Picture 1 (cartoon, rainbow, N blue to C red):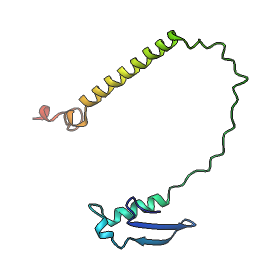
Picture 2 (cartoon, rainbow, N blue to C red):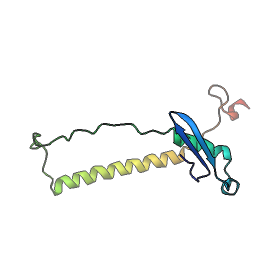
Picture 3 (tube, rainbow, N blue to C red):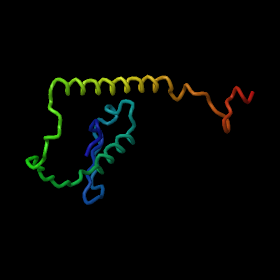
Picture 4 (cartoon, one colour):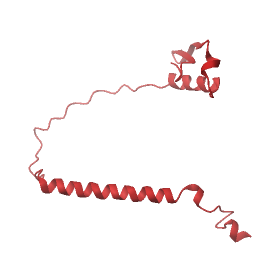
Length: 120
């Protein structure tokens, strides 16, 4: 496995580091990164594993009863649009509230329930 820029490459066999290669031009490729950062990234990538997940059985829908569902017509689509518009509006309002209450906007507290102005 290699870091993002190909500066450091590591090989791991049986959960042990077996080989390391550092690019001959590592000093020119680093930029603002450190060589330690490259090793950290390469070793992190080497330890990433993909779980062996069994395939799911295909669930057939032949025995399901869809007769209770409303028909997909213009009225149902209008209701879906209305619900989605409301959700988008609520997300927008939440984002505005989040922007207004950034961590730097709250007054600093000293001790329990005291602000700097109250203690002066």
